[in-house]
Length: 156
Image 1: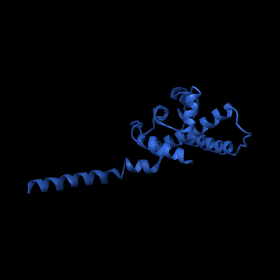
Image 2: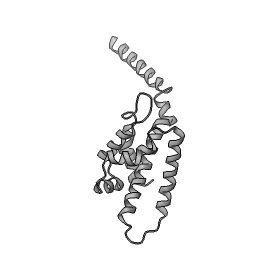
Image 3: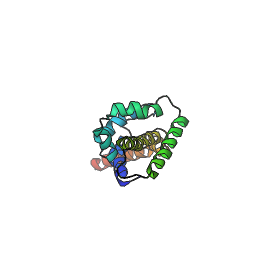
Image 4: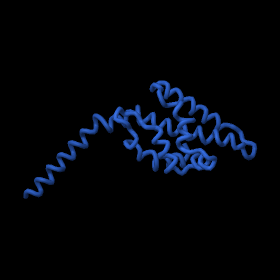
């Protein structure tokens, strides 16, 4: 992952951890896609926007077929294939300036890998489940004890 994509993940996607989660724990990938197109500043997003691609079209064509109605295993299989395809595209030798159709595909695959992987991790990832589940009690316990300390200090 290049520095630009890391920044995109850190600055745009990291803030979505809870924003796009459904009550069942699934991730709202369409909403994440909208957010990425609205807030993201990467070469891939810029290329796609300049080519007239918007979030609803990208979601419908590129993301939904690899997410909607699929099991965890099917989603993982699709993501793995896109990662492999992305690696293959990266090894392609360019003769000067590649055709726009190649750059369209390259940008779409790169963005697809990042968004699908992010949604998969936020839906099934262990750290996310721990932070919102069994380890959450520590935060609540600490907050209760801090409130007790403040009450005791005010009473004095």
